[in-house]
Image (cartoon, rainbow, N blue to C red; front, side, top):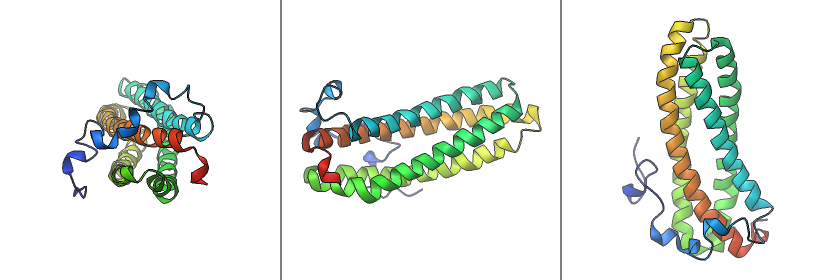
Length: 194
C-alpha cells in the first residue's frame, strides 16, 4: 500500500507518537489532568468512551480468538466473531467518517497550528481502512471454518496474530487522536463544533 503522508516516518505503522510540533497543547492540557478539567464532561468524555469501547471490543475478540485456538466451541466463536467483529468494523467506519467529514475540519479551524495533525489522523483512517478490509476477509474465512473444528483452531492462531497487529495500529491512532483532539476541545470548548 503506498504511503501518501508527506513524511513517511509519520505513517501509522512507523511512528511512535506525535511529533513535538503537534503536541504543543499537551503542555497546557496533560492527559493526567483531563478528567479534572471543567470541559471534560459531555463530548470529551463521550469521545474517549468510544475509544475505550473499541479497545474493549478488540480485547474481547483477542480472548475469544485465543480460546478458539485452544479448542473452544467453534460455533460459539464464529457467532461472537461475526457479531462483535461486525460491530467493531461498523462502529470504526462510522466514527472515522464523522471525524473526517465533521470534526477534524472544525478542530483544524479552531487550532490552525495543528492542521497537519488532523490531516495525519485523516490519513490514519485511510490506512486503517485497509486493515479493516483484511480483518473482515480473515474473519469471514475463519467463520466459514466453524464446521471444521481442527482447521478453525489452526486458523484462529493466525488470526490472533493478525488481530494483535491491528490492535497495535489502532491503539497508536487512538492515542495520537486523543492527544490532539482532547486538548483542543478543553482549550476551546465544544460549542464551536456545532
